[in-house]
Image (cartoon, rainbow, N blue to C red):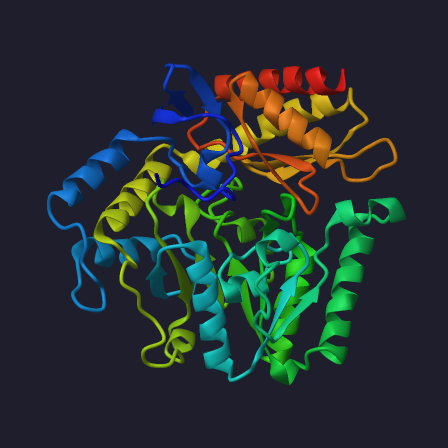
Length: 425
């Protein structure tokens, strides 16, 4: 009898039969408040009627139109629609299926466009599990251990992550100074600018602990990239499509006097409410440097996924979901900080929009994965589904669908409070 790999561990015991909005229902008919959203994928909630209708209609017309063989209308329409929301100048698109594929495509393009071999990534970043993507991932060894040798040409520089420097007493400015100084040191001692194709970075660390960057750090990256002819590649796989309370995560760090725009931008997850589609966007003059035959794939830009993505973008606009993510995120962070005030083991509540992390530490200030796991389990037992992340899995993360309501946020905070009390007393 066949079975799933024993390494595919479920974070919750739920066997779902159907979903609706921010709720999942199991075989017993029990309703669970889903604040995982398929790891940030079901942006418009489970089975949004408009997305369902678009997918069903497309299934009846054309399921698979391999896009280097034929062209289909949903892809053409999605390309045009994304042109309305992408950062200015990113006018050329390549589509794939997963975040890992987007990372590989961005890497390949950066190297081909610059003729340079090296990529600088930032401590705590997650970019996928395929060989090249895992080689660029530093959020945890579990994503890259056991199948070396990995890809060469990857150099790691610090991300301005306050949780890593808490014991030093540094403020955000000092941490940012340190991160930029270390980047300069990397370019001086490990990867010459003439050998550096790109900086690859998430606006908010995802698997690395839900840690936002900051405006001055990203301005520093853009300035150094421009000075040295290095491409800035921004991984918006988890932060895109309204997740952070702005359409793109990098929007939080754009200055009016010096707007920060990536040269290449990755996207996936929330674009199609659960259908697999990803891609990269770049300026045409960069995309033109891709070598012939380097871009393609059997399932990329599947017609049904494109139709679902179009409907998702419509729903995000029509229901003001970016603004809702911002408002509900403020509400949730305030509630979680109120809970944290009663428990010294909760050392931080952070995040942007509906991408929020609650960090646990023990009495000596060390990362406390055991307590985070116990709280996550206790919440699931009470009907609230959550996940963990962070270098030591010491962070419980909240990533509900962007359609979440004020009452549902209130309910989730109440369940979480009970879960924390059951674990910490």
